[in-house]
Image (cartoon, rainbow, N blue to C red; front, side, top):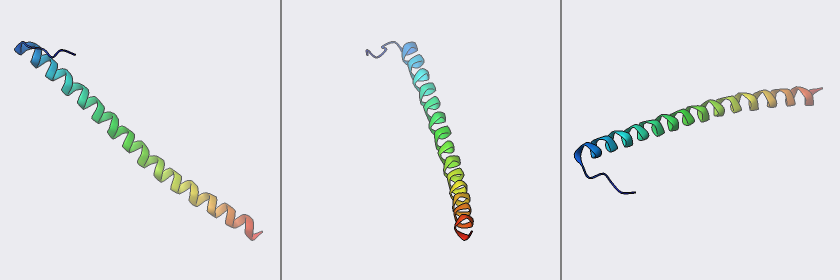
Length: 59
């Protein structure tokens, strides 16, 4: 890809790249938040499964 040579084209290209970088950063933060939520949900579910298994074995 050929880089822009005029100052206005360079400015527009820089703004475009910053916009893409910001979008990617927001997406990564969103994915990280989902993983954290999934981790806590998995811990809660695991705790529930252990409690149910324990109750089942006690019968």
